[in-house]
Amino acid sequence: MLEGIRQYRAGAAPRILMTGGAVRNQFIESHVMMQYAHAQACPYPHSLPKQNRTNTIQNAYYSYRIMQVEGWTSALIVTSPTHVRRASLIFQHYPLAWKMD
Image 1 (tube, rainbow, N blue to C red):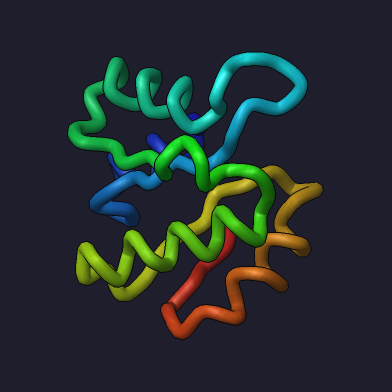
Image 2 (cartoon, rainbow, N blue to C red):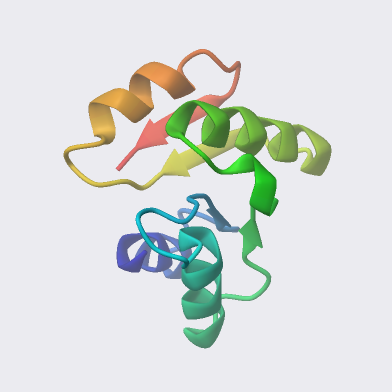
């Protein structure tokens, strides 16, 4: 989340879309991240609908759908170092300009 906010502030990401569901607890990751980003003066962060966050494949699919509706054509994906390979393999199946960080 901190890197996403840094990228937003640097102008590399004009919007932030959070993904992630409740993992081993009741907290929905994307909602917590959205609240934090908003508290850090990132206006209008987006979050996937609650029912759509169960794994990386679904996160990619629903992120792509939101991006289509919003007219977004590229994305900078910020994830953990251990998750970069999996995320890049999944996101490459969607016809957008993706960059991993």
